[in-house]
Amino acid sequence: MLGRPERHFPSVHIGGTNGKGSTCAFTAAQLSARGFRVGVYTSPHLVSVRERMVVDGVPISEAAFAEWTTFLKPHVERLDASFFEATTAIAFADLAARGVDIAVVEVGLGGRLDATNVITPLVSAVTKIAREHVDYLGPDLASIAREKAGIAKPGVPFVFGERDAAVRRVLATEAERRGAAPVTAVDTTRPPRGPLGLRGRHQHGNAWVAHAALNALPPPFGPVGDAWPESFGHAYVAGRFDVRGRWIFDVAHNPDGARVLADTLRECDPPHPRRALVGVLGDKDYLGMIECLAGEVDAFMFTLPDTAPERRRWDLARLERELGGLAVAHEFEPDFAAAVERVQDGAATVIVTGSFHTVGDALARLPGFAAVG
Image (cartoon, rainbow, N blue to C red):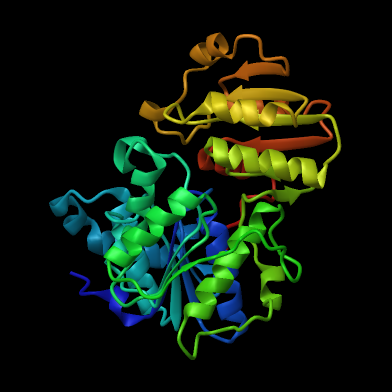
């Protein structure tokens, strides 16, 4: 079919619950700054699936994506492959075809059983661990950590940025059991030594994980030494506290992400009134997310993003009952287009969050915001 395109380029593999995409961005920025042709595979996308597979900042072309899709379709159907498995195959084929020097690959879900885990990278990294996808990854942080550490490979350096001592031990133990060497716990509490292109105090930790991963790379890709890479100041990922005029787009999709968004709002202090357009998938802890954000916004507009899968959509009528006495002003508008218009009324700052679907659908509707390249 495709052979093994992932063997045609060296790679960096990055997993974790939150911060994977940002850590990929920091890592790729420095590799690009050193003159390498860098491929990046991330997920999910915001507006176009082509965002997932990028080489030197350029997404896969529409023609190439269509060609790979046509070629792979009978094999995908024969194997009953998932959408993510299919896009991973296309991504690896595209990165190989475009002749990347090195690829930065983000884990999709979990780690051990993820489609990206067919690669044997030069270094594996895990950012931080939080509760997510408990039906697939396990009911507690230790179970989730073991799944995330499943990207560890024999003889391959493994770095991780988790701060909780008990979870750190699980990550280290599992990585060592899988033969990773060396296994490095990163001190992510240090302040950065230079500017970061991504906003928020939480990005300090992601940058330190990227720095450790870069230092674990063999020549010619690494190490970078103790010096703080200037390239980190130019890293960018759409939808990560992404400020565009009075709009802020953030793909916080679990309580940990919502807590980080709230912290960053406090830190950056955008002007009031702040109105939040929020659409969350029904299988998430949406009440926990709303609770995290309630202290930093003046009003909520709860809605249903158009691209959210029907079976995973949250029930706004149920949400209204569950919210009880939420003190912050709030409205319910199931029509997404109407919600995008209504949330702007009287707002000095509009925060769009809750899921990739919500952010992506809003970007697609707002003039000038949805360019893919």
